[in-house]
Length: 217
Image 1 (cartoon, rainbow, N blue to C red):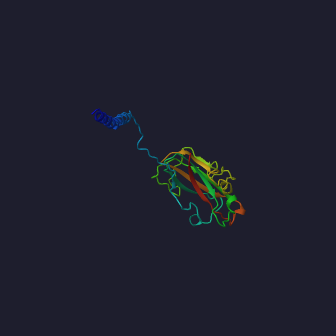
Image 2: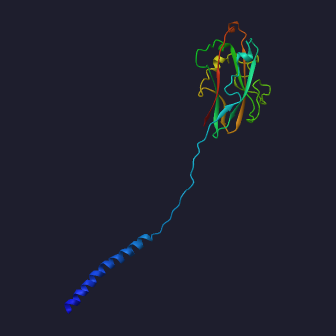
Image 3: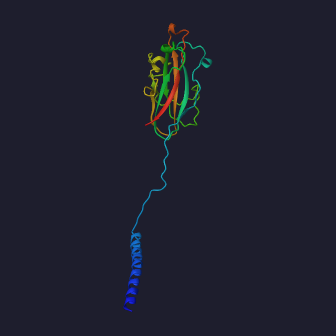
């Protein structure tokens, strides 16, 4: 009889051990999963690169050509005007460079062609600027980025020729026309030439490309 009781007791104890372990594990799991937490976040991040955008009122069109100017005479100045529009989102420095086009181009007129570049008042992008300069918005005090006065004036520096102007052939050596120019700014320019009264200029010719370039600073 005592043996049966002992066996039953041992069986009950053996069964109770796993149950106790399960209950203990449950208590430990609940204790672990009840830890305190906190979070913070920065949602909605986005990026937009800035831009440098430049255009002009005479884009891809020659300002000077024999069809319009004919065979030019000494000491008869001619001018052409244009508007340069900056619409980039980043402030930019703008410069003018002048080069000889690629290919077999004769440049024998360069040393006899006195040049000047005058900068007028800033205007809006909707302001018309006649290429013939009939409505050029001159500054109260004339500002010349090349030469000291108009090429047609007697006081113009005669060494400021197309040959010299073409030494400003890259952005690095270009003529500064605007610093930290903000978005929606329109610059105006009047470019004037006059052939020197020198017999050696007869029959000479040349070509040039005017390039306006903006770089963000």
